[in-house]
Image (cartoon, rainbow, N blue to C red; front, side, top):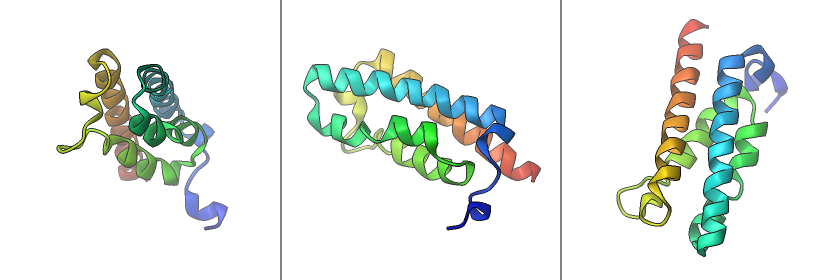
Length: 108
C-alpha cells in the first residue's frame, strides 16, 4: 500500500486524531488492568491496540477500531474480565472514533 492509498494524514483530520488518541488512552488503561488482574488472554489481545490507535493512518483506523470493538463479542467479552468503569468508556471512545471516520468519509 502506498502512502496515497492510506488517505489523508492524521494531523489533517484533528477530530479523528483526537478520537483515536482518546481511544488509545482507554486501551492503555484496559491493558494495565488486564495485566494487573492476570487476564492474559485480554492482555495479549489488547497489547497492540494502543500503539495501533496512536500510529495508524486515517485509512487504517477503521480496521483497528473494529478489531478492538470485537473484544465486546457475544461469546467472549472483555466486559466479563475487566471492570465496567474501564470497558464502557473504551467502547464509547471506539464508537466516537468510528463515527468521526464515517463523517469524514461522507464529507470527502
